[in-house]
Length: 82
Image 1 (cartoon, rainbow, N blue to C red):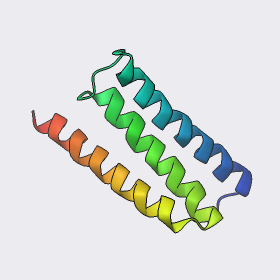
Image 2: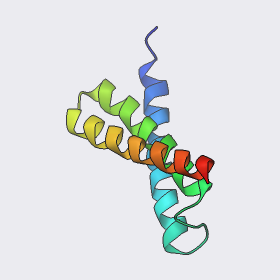
Image 3: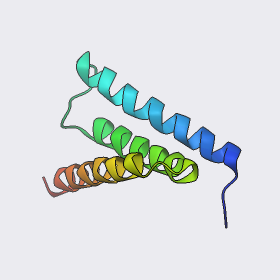
């Protein structure tokens, strides 16, 4: 089932907002860099950017955000193991 272009645009913008929010919140000490909120924002942001990048055919962004998401997943797993 293909997603609509409008929905993919929405998901992509949400992803961008999530990543910028994560960076801003950590930069201003509102959340810790080693916490759940930061990693979840990075993960959801990366997934959103992957969706829109696939639709628009931007492989560099897809690859970058696959790594971004993988780092967030590993960090989240480490939080679970703690």
